[in-house]
Length: 145
Image (cartoon, rainbow, N blue to C red; front, side, top):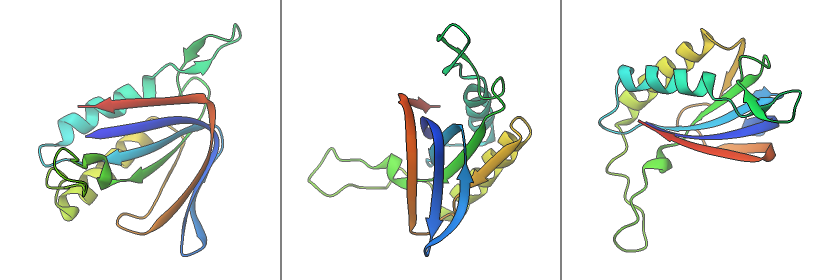
């Protein structure tokens, strides 16, 4: 699994000009599922994500987690995180998981996050989505397992 995590003051995702997910302060997470991924990897990344200390404390140090600030999550599936551009100019996505498997693991990941974070929003798997965000910092973190 691959995650692109952006610390945001707000973020939203739209499908067909309708907002389907919207958060305030927290993380926008782009999640890609690969062929070799499983629930064990998802569990590891949920723990890492929810305990990642990148929010500022009273001393302006990145020392607080999303749980510490009562932050929110917006999780969006993005198979293009598995793009392979080594040959030619057109990306190959052969390492991305089968859509049915990927959607199941995506939903599993979201449900595990809901056990740790109060407000978890999501996009619509496989839809053409428009994502808007205000990145704080900017802070962008890549996680992979």
